Every structure is written in C-alpha cells, then in structure tokens.
Length: 227
Image 1: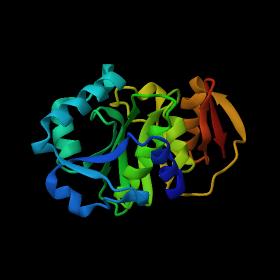
Image 2: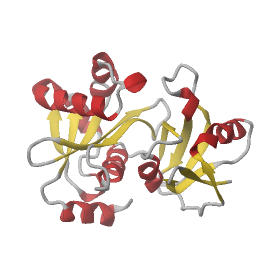
Image 3: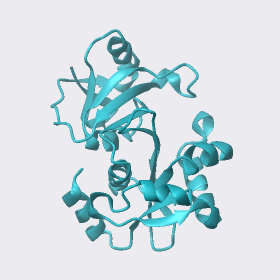
Image 4: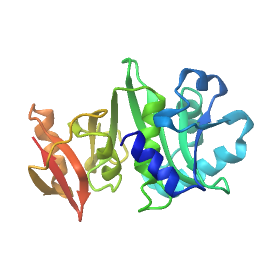
C-alpha cells in the first residue's frame, strides 16, 4: 500500500476522509499527513460522540471475547495513542485501526482493525495510513487464521509468523502473533493451508521454522503461506 494507492482510494470515494481520534497532546508526536493524506484531528475529550460511535462500531465488528471494554479504550487506545479512522460525510465510522507504540523504537502494536463496509478496501487504507502516522518500520500484532482482515494485513507486507497467541488471549486457539516489516518485498505463496491448520504452522514457527503469511492472505478459507 503506497501513496498512489491511498490517493486513488480517496479520489474514488470523495465523501470519505481520514481522521485521528485520541488525546490532544498525542497529535504532535505523529505524522498527521500520512501517505500524502491530511488527517482531521479529534481530541477525545472534546469529541465524546465520535468516541461513542467508534466504540459501538468496534463492538459490532468484534463482540464476544474480543469485545473492547470502555476502560481499555480509554486507558490503552485514546490516552497513549490514537485511533485512525475513515469517516463518511455523516461522521459514521467506515474503517478504523488502532496502533500503540511499543518500547522498541519504530515498532507499533496493531490492536484493532475493522471495516463496516466490506469490499470497499477501506481496511487496508486505514491501516496503512495509521502505521505511517506512527512512522513505524515494523508492525506487530495478533490476528486469527480465519479472519478476513488477513487480506488487509498482508497489504503492508508479508507477515512473519512468530508463534501462537498467548493462552490469555480471548481467541488463542485460532490466533497467532505476527510481525510485518513495512514495505518488505512481497513473496509468492509456496503452499496453501486450510485456516484450521494455522495453529500447526504457528507451532512450527515457534520452534524455529521460517513461516510467512503472504498476499492475498485468506482466500476461500485457505491461507497463503511461504517459508
């Protein structure tokens, strides 16, 4: 996902715009014109309606064991970082991604990606812009082997499988930890596995095997793997 692709997306959808929601003091530490698109800024303390709309959209996208508690939204999303949003002309959330800086410089932890309009391509765009806001060279995250978001994750580069998600994770049985070097050279799939076999691949990676999830990520219930 590069500057041209992001520009083409917003040109094709002129009623959509990029925005950033978080603690007011955080905006100065970020690139608020990521990939050539100027992001509107919304201080969370002054925009309770937008905070509520984001929280509701996140709940609709996830729910269950991955539901976002209000205190986590405030303490771990809005205060230390920002939520990157694509909004429509009615201020409804079209897509959103939250990245939280880690103690490793240049490494950002992606903690939430969703789109309310599947098929639009907004998820890949909002994540690319969010990562660029943080000026990150590496994005770390946890996702599910059967999650359609794999397609958006792989648009930033191949995902190195680190291993299974920690057991405390609400969806550990079908999740894995990955790292993505932003803009790394794309690799062609060497084989495809059913999503249900993903946990085996995660265990192989944890034991030292090189395993990558590569574009297009997930297709018809199968995951593209290189290694």
